[in-house]
Image 1 (cartoon, rainbow, N blue to C red):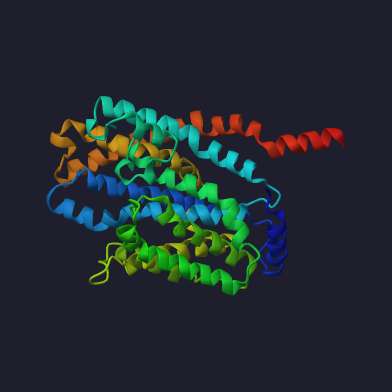
Image 2 (spheres, rainbow, N blue to C red; image 1 turned 90 degrees about the vertical axis):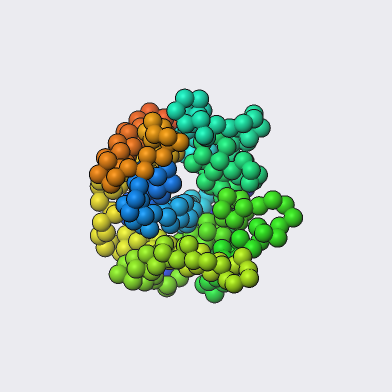
Length: 383
């Protein structure tokens, strides 16, 4: 299966939209991945309670919403995949590229989690072969009771795996649609975000608004649709001077309560909408050659480490704090900040090692089996 027909039509309109055809790399979004990883790191420092007293309250005020960094990752994933998708690429080739991108590092992350659970962090121990096997296969998030089996951070990879599985079909449905249709899909995605807790509450099948992949899919789809809108239509997102405050507002409203008497959370829709606008605005800045802080070379290098950093940081945070009762140091702020710095440096060093030693090397190995590459090779030989 290819999606060349729909994407070719989109490509013609893409040229008409005025976007430079060569602007496929979006460095600001790579930098944004690192900023997102830092938000999640700060949230887990809060969850493990490195800081005590008033400093802990202040840290919590800033980073309680840091878990929404995963939301930003999901939007980024949809946007980047739609932006860079190759029209002639088969679904099998696409899926192989995604497996090569995340699976080797995922397996290493699970092994590291098992080591941590057997030694320093028994609280994350997985009871039973079934949930552990489900985590290895990236399906454990479909059972809310197993959502943090194996490596606790890898629950989001279960969602990503589902997004990757559905992407070739999603892009066929939305590519080539009118701007009005794409805006309708965007509005529907935001509505589903707000309704997700209510859907989970009434579902006859156990579901979690936080971890069930199907209920997180609208965030990914929104990223896909905004990439198409930017590429194919005259729409231009708000400048960063407006998009950044809106994203901050969305971050702040992520913890807003549900509507009275319901499980509907409009604050979540504001969060996702603000984040999506930030992603689109940063991409537009890259396309039109406007420099952003996140496009700098240091942010690029750190952005490339963000996936490995995300998979190991919680294991490191919990291991570093394991010497304290129940693993919650609750220290005065200078000592807590020093301990957080230690956890950060170890996480970053380990991420660098895994990125260089596992992630990039295994990608090269696995992509040798790309069916599209082999087909091109045979075609060239016969020609």
